[in-house]
Length: 148
Image (tube, rainbow, N blue to C red; front, side, top):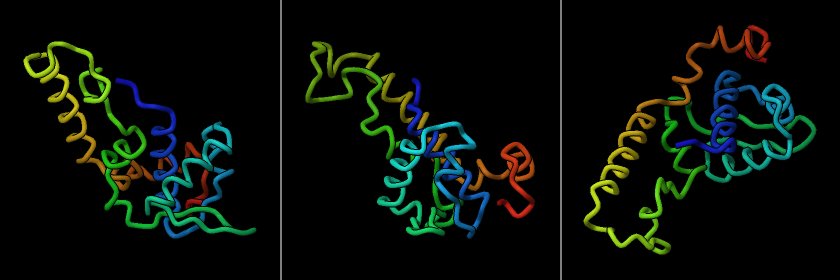
């Protein structure tokens, strides 16, 4: 299974804003640090804002910051949001499934168990966890000691 770059950068945006705390982060700065198009990051910020994960501030001094505590956001919920629907195989989609083995296939049950296990692990990791090595992250991202 490979997650989309959209999911990857959504998590990176949340990680970055967690490092910044209450300070506002500019989407252009986040895009530049991760070498991603600003347009792509704006789409991510808009989704995360609409869904209540980021507070979006308009205007000259605008940007984004976490709308809820970093330890209240799990990686699993962000993956579900950005990857929906999570379909590892054709049989995950009742509307388009053409497999004649549905309902009796042990492989299908295995795929479902694997996806559940994957998401269980991600549900145990928060944005605070992935921003927990603050010193190393701020050094790598060339942030100052205040996270800015």
